[in-house]
Amino acid sequence: MWGELAPPTAPQERLCQLTGKGYASGMRGDRIEVLVDTGNGVRGFEIVASRSGRRVEVTTSRSMIEVAEVTRTGQPVRTARFLASRVVAIVEHPAADGGPAARGDA
Image (cartoon, rainbow, N blue to C red; front, side, top):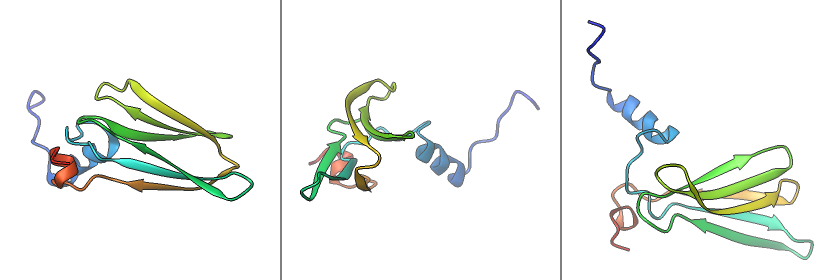
């Protein structure tokens, strides 16, 4: 009884993918666009998961917003930091499930 686990249902599998545990290997194409007030206008910065298996994570603290491209093991490859008071918007563009970017056809 205790040694057997029931297979996860579809909503549980989706939840695992959303939380980053057991995510699909085809994360290539995920990107986050950060719009920052520069004083003379708004400038956009884009952080992209450039290889298969990488993902983009956003960490928000009191005064900083950090956007990082990380590997499957969680090692940061690229990091961008922005002052939270200057950030106008953060726009997430996830790769389409099964689309050309997720399959590696891009």
